[in-house]
Image (cartoon, rainbow, N blue to C red; front, side, top):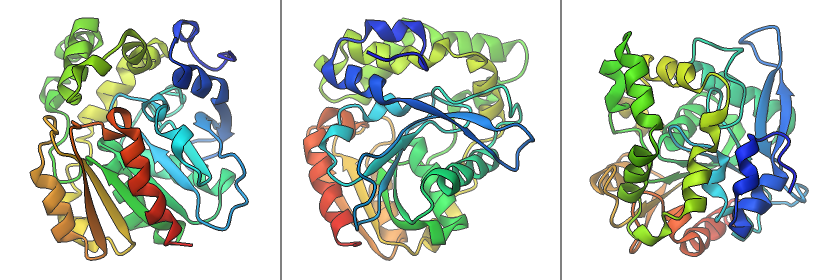
Length: 298
């Protein structure tokens, strides 16, 4: 298993989907308007990206990484990319200390320009949904469609934002790093608690070993996150698929209906017996919702 771009702990991955994804992770230097030095950016490139339909670009959630899509990615027959957002996952955290949604959007656009450069279907999960919405509103020419998986956007930003002042900021991130706390969060995110396996916990924690994890998390949370988005969601004009776990205990289910009502060209698909992460709990049903949506955009 090639794990040279990942922390050494990745050698402990045990599930086949995790091991296969780890072997595909690459890092590309992405030049951005954020500074003179290109930003090393972790991603999984699409295979056979010459197909007629637009490729998908998978965007993970808060304090997560592209490993969030390890179970979904093998089921997507459409050319599909995955990327670690600026300041998250295994992308560099040191070259842009003033982390904010604006910086994340500029970096993501630069990544799209340099490696893809044709309209994509953005697939955003949780906070990644908010990042996808922000990108789609700013760069509509780059977006053929939008998929929101239990997405943030109407929801408020991270609840720990008020704690991000010294010395409470270090305490808050140390709390979030605690394995018991992370396990509790994972169990809340899943409907089927048996899926919170040692491999799943390792996937969710690998990026904690990256340099400046704490500093980036503090900077993003202090920025206020995506609290500014809710009034703009009705401006989304591209075709949009809303995918939602019927038992989401993180965001609840009301926001699914709010997205459907606010976005004119939208369709809502419920994934039964799933919590906040249907792409991990029932990747087959999630893929079955995504693929026809992308095919109709060809």
